[in-house]
Image (cartoon, rainbow, N blue to C red; front, side, top):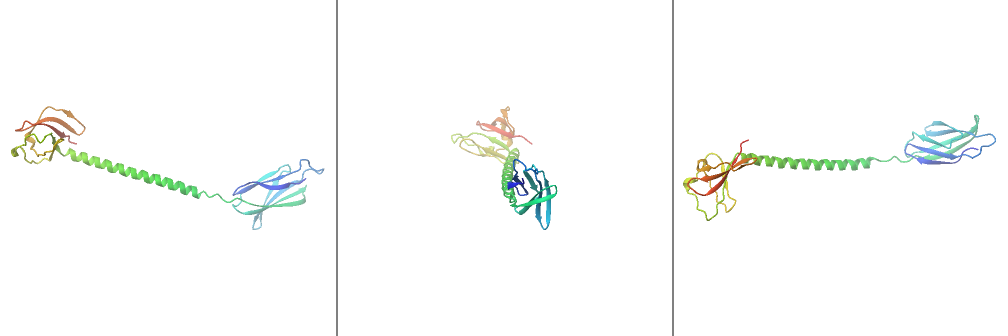
Length: 216
């Protein structure tokens, strides 16, 4: 009435589940006792006491991809009747390194993309700030003048200390004007960086618009 059909039901890298069959009916002497001996190598063994009605046992704490031998010693009340040997191999250790490498590459690429985006945003922001700062240091006069309009005389156009630029949104004719040659009318509108005034230019009936950049 001892165990038969010994087999491995589940194989792991650090152990196995050893399974066997026992007869449905015990002999007239009853069920045999089972002592499981695992041969670990180098003369070392491990004894596992098994219940006579038990049909499987988990053997753990083994090395991966290694051959082991077990012995099912059966007997009655300390009298050994037989030793049933069975040899098996544990599974290979799962290699998680590939998954870690892939995850590391993905994280590295995402970090690199994030850094590039951050650098681009910083550069764009710095360029915008510098542009605004340059504009804040400039007094500008904007006016439209077509080629049909008459030109200004040289006495109305002279350089002075403050930086000034003039641009036209039509056919462009540029002059550098002294500040006192431009007369402001009441405020027309105000933006984030400048105030807009209707303006007239001395010795001229040309209509103009003056944009005065705000100070910091």
